[in-house]
Image 1 (cartoon, rainbow, N blue to C red):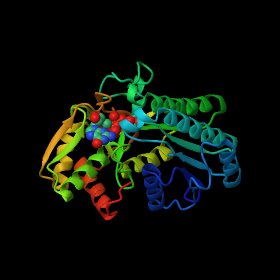
Image 2: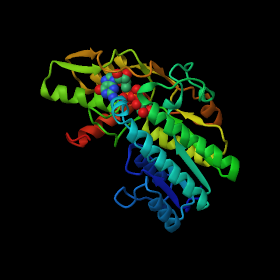
Image 3: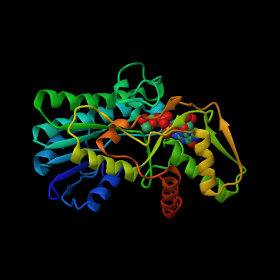
Length: 312
Ligand code: GFB
């Protein structure tokens, strides 16, 4: 990307989009195009069509998505599949119609089969049934990456698809019901400490393994791919290492300084038993994550505390 290029960050107020804007600014890309949800509804074709015709971006980061943790995926599957399909279809199609030079689509490692061999390589895609708790979201993300590949094949576009693992960092949503595990646990332990509660309840058995990538690392990886990658193959973006939910809870307990008891609520869903990505392809391309989990959680916790109590 040329430093003066017009770059559209779709979803710039979210966890991923805001980190992309920070990274782009840091690297001297200042000609950014952004629009809030009040200005355009990305699920509405005419809104997106008018926006592209008027703004004419040259590069697009497709970070707009309806996202949430395991419970949000279970309770709102219709919204997850509809909103994500519509946003992707509108943005990818209008990018093509308006001659966008390059687009980066952000998927998720939940596109891979529930029982995929671990760590998960990119070629595990569509080799088995999906994890039921987030199948609707995963199907939408699979459609998005397949759309990129189809447009590349038929129209010769350069659309790339990155599959980030579980993300965390400043500007996340700290909602206890609908958020992802890491921000939800940070908030639970923080509140339990402040209120002197004797117990913190962690959902599920504590046994599932997850991989967590700090959001500023993800943003760097996206810029790296946009500038150095043109392949049609999807690319995992993660750290390559996993941690159990029980060990994550213990790490967060230490970071927040909580001294009470941790109990597991086994009536709550575990989701995918193990989800750790194989990042050797991205390493071979020349990028790897820099922020270790303890450091990343520490930074996220500092940010959360600075927001006061209203984390979501
Ligand atoms: O981040 P999370 O909600 O989603 O993590 P996934 C769920 C795991 O953390 C389950 C446990 O094993 C839960 O039992 N957990 C423990 C908790 N305590 C909590 C808590 O307080 N809140 C939450 N949310 N979980 C997501 C997908 O799957 O992965 C998304 O739902 C997305 O669509 C994302 O793809 C990358 O890691 O299971």
